[in-house]
Image (cartoon, rainbow, N blue to C red; front, top):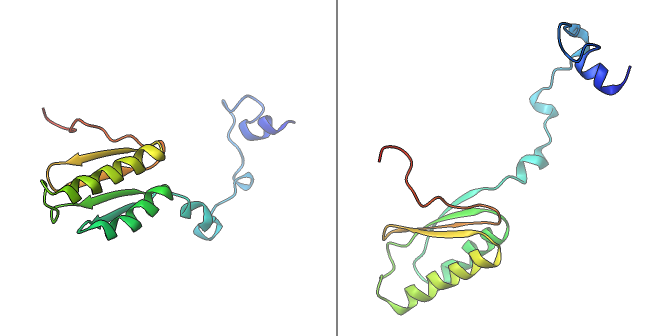
Length: 123
């Protein structure tokens, strides 16, 4: 009996139930905690000035998503344009995505994550 036969049963999984003693119960202690540490995280940040970009950039380079509050930045300020350009460059470097939500938030996504530009729900 091959591996697939053992897995699916002799009839390909149809019509024959496996005996209960062939099943193994998996408990919470059996889950590898290292596997969950590799999951992408979503961070919330406030951007007040250039110094706040260091942790945001590190998070995106590490494969995490950042939702940053930019309400404290002045929209017409040259420093604000520089900050947004720098975040745009980070998103491009990691082949991620960046989008500004209204006047108060920027979402920066890591490698392989694309941010939808259309709202879900009623239109």
